[in-house]
Length: 495
Image 1 (cartoon, helix red, strand yellow):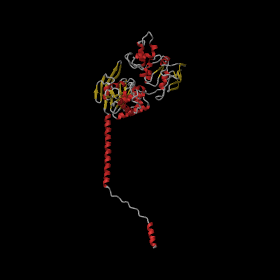
Image 2 (image 1 turned 90 degrees about the horizontal axis):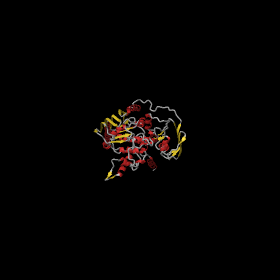
Image 3 (image 1 turned 180 degrees about the horizontal axis):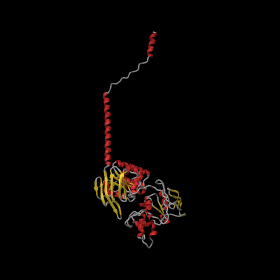
């Protein structure tokens, strides 16, 4: 009995052999199906690649398609030939920079293209079709939109009403304001512009008004877009948004004409450049194959060895000083001094208080405290009249709104800050034709008549006997004045 027990015990302790896995039979159908799937995906990938190549080739061909051709364009105004046999060409899907000095005829040429002006001579072809005299409505129907250098809006209307001006949406006999506001909101959101379409335009700062102009032009779905100095009043962030919009429009095949004096902006967006000088066509070239120095040389007609040459000027006595100036929330404890022959620049971001400071000095805005000293003596300035009598003049930020009476003639605008010098109770306004001619020559202005309603520089420029112009920011106006050779009767400083 004992051996049997031992054998049973040993059998319980013995390990069981491992189980062998069953190998399933080879699934030939499944393997063949997977192989077909791989081949199908490969063919689909190849087809997508071929489609992309075809789109790229089509895009390249579209890029070479000429959508605007202007030949021998001439335009004259009384006493001035603005355009002298100018040629211009724009291709689909490109950004063309139109460059030149002030007065080269860039804006005039684009106004001919957009129908604002009618040409005297030359041919105009858009999308392969020749056109006679265009008008703004016909140009818009053809597909041309322009963003003017100067703001061109109805300030008493809302953002949406300005964007749809001339092409309003209607519901029966009434305007469909809800539809226009909704569409305007969609366009503003797409452009990342934080504005209420119901807001009145006059309540917006200049930079936001400029963005409304851009949105207005883009809302027409134009295929030819002209931008005349679009970044002049924009912040750095708004400029980046504008460049993003330009790249998107370029990818859609839109042809863009970009006019700017900020040459450093060109490298971000421009494909080709066309250069004008004194109303004449100079050259066109690819931007990648030219340097900024060469562009400047073509613009001015000579080689520029130094862009910003150091000019030494003997510093005179202190003529102007501001101590502890306070005016509103933006202007707090401002101190600075100005010497004869000196230019003092105010730098800062938008909203830093530069413009508000100059307005307070000139008496436009009320002051809460501080001293203004002229030649060491304190002067009281409560309004612009006091500032002008003290010899201080201001070139405002918005010259069209705050610096000019555009319904009056050049003669009257010149006279406004100089009534004590130009007339009295017994003499007429601006005493002699010689005085008028001398002023025009000194300021580099050309006009057939002093009675013409033309926008001059600003009334401050007519302050022939004044000595302290004040600038809220650096402007081409300052350079034009210095190039003209005008000299005041006493040394002056500039802010």
